[in-house]
Image (tube, rainbow, N blue to C red; front, side, top):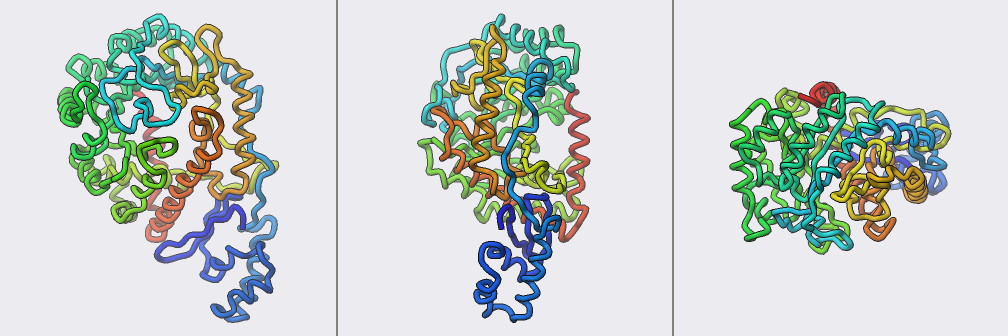
Length: 502
């Protein structure tokens, strides 16, 4: 049955229907038949399962399947005729003009580390390399001027990010632009910096604290794991000790700021040791944002290697740990107990999407409208050191995804063309996929350095589906034992919205 995904927990059988976004508990017989119903005739189904079930049970099950798959019933499915961005052309033009929400400045292409899996160190086919390029003050000010002129209808806070390379190599520029931004934009601002943490010092720390800047620091786990991949450019030595010393000093400067505004950016790279990472996060007590290293297009490892991180015995143990904590209400405590920070970082995304999903009557007008794709140039922009506009920082260097520059502004026709191309791509690949409502496919996951790439999409799809297979099982396992066990997610969303700025 198309758009249906079947799965089991330790206790029950379930069918997820992407057409309506429902999850249904079913018996073993319906569960077994769901693979074949509508694919082969009832007579053949009877023959195939004759040795497993009594004839009268099969007949009753086939009758029930006919009832629950009819139009309007709970397991009815009808693939969309096409996929489309939720925004129309006129809305895209309007939002580009006045609803810019976030701008990220690539303040330098240089970095003092040479992380083995970094996209800018030659590990990925076609990617650009680190260079001695720095954004100048005029370019940075012009970027903020552009943001100021195009955020009239944006919902606050307006986000301004600093990115690299290692952005703190251009700290003087960051300091000046924070002040300039506050002068030019009369809405609440949220400043963010993504850093490797090696250049944090007393001056930088006080500046971060005084301006309540959200800090994302790259740490991959304990010293033995982190230093395996994240070493200094100059001498090849690991960066762990320097980073942890700097984070300790920042925490001592202002524990309240540290607790609310500092997070770890954690990349899982095979061979993983999830138990060691879990223990490390519990010890340092800093919430992590967890991601898998990108496996497509790299020379570092085979594409299948990374998936082992989330299918190992250690991963299953962490899923059980999260399940127990959700059932008991422990993970809902605020602040989150430190021993659960890592498993929350691992499984939060998938379980959150499931719990907050909207139940539908189907695809409106037979069109699947995806709302998780940004409008290039409207929701956010990445600005390179020389003032070029890209869809986001993840596609820096992919020339076809350059959508304008500071001199000419956004090329709206280019944006419309990209959206149309993306729609066509998803029409071809996504209409019959059970994970269509959860998938976060975007320009970065469909385009490679040499063009739209079906092989990359296929790889990305498999990773996404594997994530949501785990999430569905985890989600239902929790609700079987405590139907209120995940309600803290709604409260967390409300808390997040109220604490985005200091």
